[in-house]
Every structure is written in C-alpha cells, then in structure tokens.
Amino acid sequence: MKSYVNPGEQLVVALYVRNVKESSEFYQSYGFEVVRDEGTFMELKWEDARLFLSAVPGTPPPPAKPIGNMRVMVPDVDAYWTLANKMGAKILSPIEDRYYGLRDFIIAGPDGLALRFATWL
Image (cartoon, rainbow, N blue to C red; front, side, top):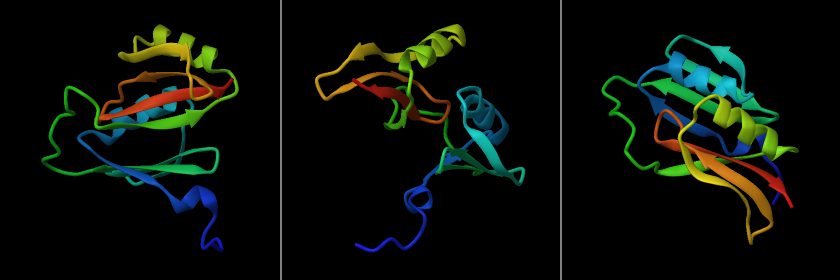
C-alpha cells in the first residue's frame, strides 16, 4: 500500500480529557513535546508520532481500570522505570522481560489510557 501521509501522522491517538493542562503535564513529564497548544486542544509528539488531547465538557473521570495502553519504544526502558517510580506513577504491570521479546512496564495515565514503555530484548 502506498503511503498517503507521513507515518507519524497516519495513526494518531486522540484523547478526550477533563483537563488538558494536567494531562499534558503528565505526558510531558515522560518526554512528550508540545507541538500546538490551543487551550482546550493540545497536540503532543513523541518523535514523529502524535497524541491529541481535547477537552470535552462532561468527559467522565477515568475508569478504575484503563481501557488500553499506548506503547512507547525507548532505548533504555530501565531509565523510564526509574522515572516512573520517582514520580510516583501508578504501576499496572512492573518491569519485566516478556516472552514477546520486549522488556516493558505499564503505568496508569490520567485519562483512562495507560502508557507502556518498552525496549527490545
């Protein structure tokens, strides 16, 4: 299949959030960068990938259990594990070498979507 757009713009996660500023600060603390800030909408990036945060009135609080996770590949997952613990992140799955070829862990995000940081074994 021929590419229609840059691969980093092809599949974008867009989250409806209660508080754009708080959500953005969470993602920025782990290394996401702000591309655009329109107050009630923010575009963040990780390398070429994009994450949209959109404040939607009436957005319910996040569920007790995340609805899924977004994987972020990093060269040194242990450094992110240290950061997550230092920041007091809610750990959903501790760091471990997995049968599927990754060393990874999962933390709760502020809006019902968890973050999985991973490094290839």
